[in-house]
Structure formats: C-alpha cells, structure tokens
Length: 323
Image 1 (cartoon, rainbow, N blue to C red):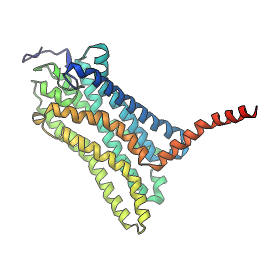
Image 2 (tube, one colour):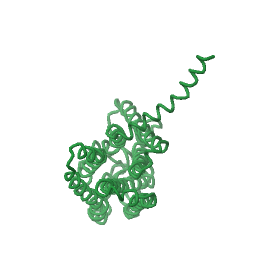
Image 3 (cartoon, rainbow, N blue to C red):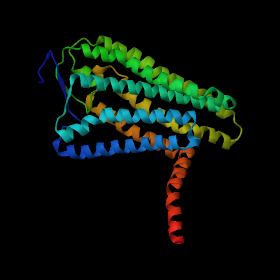
Image 4 (tube, rainbow, N blue to C red):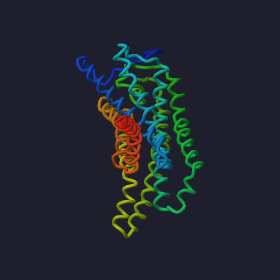
C-alpha cells in the first residue's frame, strides 16, 4: 500500500524504532523497562507529595501536574511499541493515529505552560518571599494549573481538526514509533500550508516561545535577586531551589527545538526518532530523578516515608522479643 496517491487511508502502519527483526525483543524489553521506570518514578513523586504534609506547597503541586503529564505522555507514545510486539499488529486506525497526535501535542503544550508556572512560582518565592504564601495561594495555583491544561488542549484542536480533513496520502507507513505530526505530514499529499503556518506561528510563538519567554524573564529577575544576596551560602541556597526546575526546562526546550523548530520538508525522520525517543522516554524518567536527587525536601520526605513504613515492623519485632 506504498504506491502514490492513496485517496482513502483507514489505518496507518507504524514502522517502529527499528526495522531489524532480530532486535525487536531487545527494543521491547528496553521500552518496557523505560515505561516501568517512568511509572515508578513519577508515581513515587505523586505518592510522597500527597502523603507528606511538608510538601503541600505550590512548587510540589506543579511537580505533581508535571508527573501526571509525563505518565500520560509516555503511555500515549510508547503503547504502540509494546502492543505491536505482544499482539504482532503494528497498525493503528486513522482516527486513532490523529487522536494520538492530538494527545501528544496537547500534553506537550501543557507541560511547557506548567514549567512556566513553576518558574513564576520560583520568581515569587525568591524575589517576593514575604508575600509568597499570599500570592501563591491554593486558589491561584489551582487556577494556573487549569489554565495550563485547558490552553494546551485548545491550542491543539485546530491541528486535530485539520488532520481529520486530510484525504490524500502518498503512503500509510509512518516512519516513527508512534503517530507524530511531522511523519504524518510527510505522508500527506493534501494541502498542508495551513498546518505549516499554524505550527510555525501558533505552535512556535504561542505554545513554545511564550512560556519560554515567561520562564526566561522570571529567571532574569531571579538571578538579579540572587546576585544581590551578600552571603555566599544564601546565594547558593537560593540558586539550589531553582536548579532542578532549570535543568528540566533546559533539557525539554533543547530537544523540542531540535525536533520541531524546522520546516517539515527539512526534517530527517530517522534522526527525529532518536530525539523523540529521548523526549518521550528519557525525560519522563529524568524528571523525578532530577527533582528527587537535587532536592533536599523530596529526599527528606522519602526518608520520612521509609521510616514510617518500617516503624510498624520494628514495633512488631519488639513485641515479639518481649513475648
């Protein structure tokens, strides 16, 4: 079904990470391990934040939103690799493919906005600490989170609607391990000028550049405030509170810039697979690691949870010895 001018496409064939059958089992195990680590790491963050009263702060509220986004995005993007190996079927329906694109784009837009909200939270915490709890109250944090999720969804609706109207494809084989916007646009022989323009304007300027600008401006003020702190220990402590967030922002924006900020006619789909694999698989694992290893509060909360979970066993052992 690879001949030109296909008028109707009922399903797409997902080519996967590699075309070499000998390594499919290794890829399956690797992707399964990555997915389980993503679930385990992000669910651990969610659990410890929910259970530990000391982490009920705006920063960790947004971190929970980030963990939910990472879990959902990994499930959406990696399910084709796992399901195709188990079932032997590497096809996805036309509507299923378009829905997968929509979910991925909306989650990515929401993640960029959540990271921007986290940068604003750090700005208020460092630049206006006396009014921090008044500004970043529960109502404002909840409203910011809702706006991030809704805007990410709304910005992706025109792409979803336009893709549904595409009627002509040169092939139905998607050169990727999930349905992504660039590989599908490469296959289309319909007019893609609107989507090209939308991605470069709304996609880049509103969805990517606006949150980036907000994050950048926040950190300009943050760094300016940190440099005014006379104590070296104080400067180090203030910067340490932002280091985890700054690392995640840098990694995400770097991969997205390499992957998407080019016209789709210039995109090399094979190299994009590797970048997308890092963005889809590695980053959701790195996020909880970065926030747990580089954050004293999270590490302390994990230790408290571990002590509390072991406490009943210690009491039982003492009672047993007493008997």
